Amino acid sequence: MVTSLSPLGYHRSVLAHLRRVDERAWAALRDDEAQDSALGDALLRNTYRLEAAGHPELHAAGRQAVEALGLQVELEFFQAQGAGQPNASLLHQADRAVILFEGPLLERLDADELTAVCGHELAHRVLWTLDDGAYLAADRLLDAAAGDARTPAQYLETHRRWVMASELFADRGALIACGDLRTTVRALLKVQTGLGSVDPDAYLRQAGELDLSTGSRGTSHPEGVARAWALQNWLAEQDVEVLLTGPLDVDSPDLLDAVLLRELSMDFAAHIAQAEGLRTDTVATFAAAFADPPGPLGVPGGAVPRFDEPLGIRPVDGAPIPRPRALTAATRQYLCYLLLDLATSDAELGDDGLIASLALARRAGLAEYDDLADDELGWSDKRRAELTRAVTS
Image (cartoon, rainbow, N blue to C red; front, side, top):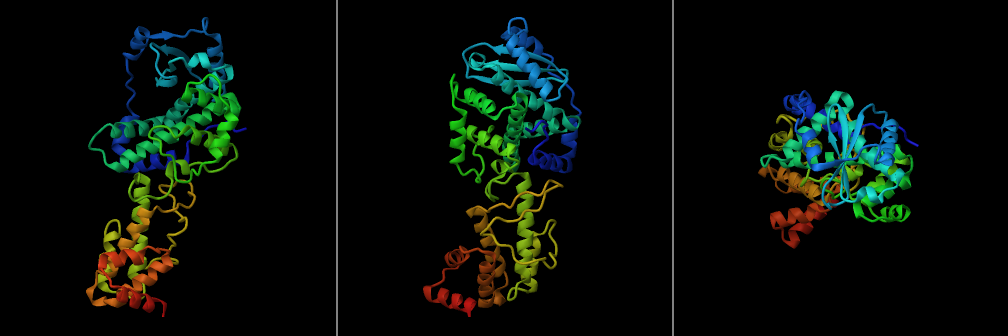
């Protein structure tokens, strides 16, 4: 049984990136110790405080979760008014941990499930207090960015994945607190469905029927079935962060994928500029625009990468080596256009440049390149057949 929590690789990578790229904003939020002085008053006015004398089972569950997660903090519980959806959330305070329950959740959880829910919420505190509040500062920065209409899409996607990563982290806290996978999944199901009786084994079987390699489509939380799958696979010491990343998609990159795509573009442009039949000063000049900052690319190392199979990805900002990433159809199409643009950038190359690009596309596994080039350049059937024969001859 796993007994300790550490940030996900995604957390570490994003934090390193923000420290480097948005250092001033991140540092300002890290040093911000201002607390909402009105929170305590608002809770007293608008909620019911769940004291130990009246709710001993809840407080026992909370103490068990605090001890299991290695926290030393005063813990308070409150119940929101009204018949809302069953939920629990952590109200983060520097000097105490406050868990707010909503809806009829407490009525549906047994003692072990209460411990799991408390562990989930307290795990957020674990994350936010690590590294002297570094992850809390990153969380604040991304949350603030998500609320600004001017925020670039890459930050919005990073925020989406960051929040989902934090939920997977918190689910691990739930598992550590109660010590049992079935109990953790049972509590998760009760929170999500509002049911009083659920079958965690059936839910884990349901998770096994899904292909989750395409990543989660959740906005703030991964799908419940994906969270159950992640817990089971985390216990088996399997990589579950594919839920956060999915294939490398040029249409929806986060901050980290944007870096990867720039590197991928630069590497492929270097291969194109050095390919036999395309090695001219004009092609090299156009290829240099893909450098960051723009400039000569030099000689690429190694063979042309294959884009029709999972691509080995270099770590970003010192993160652990990630598993190979498949490329979406949109990303492969983008690479095809990159190849076509460079292959046609020097008019003096003529057919030799096109033939060289067709050959390079085959080595790179870009089977769609022929059709794309045909559509863009308007080849006749005869001309396409001539170019294809030239490649294979």
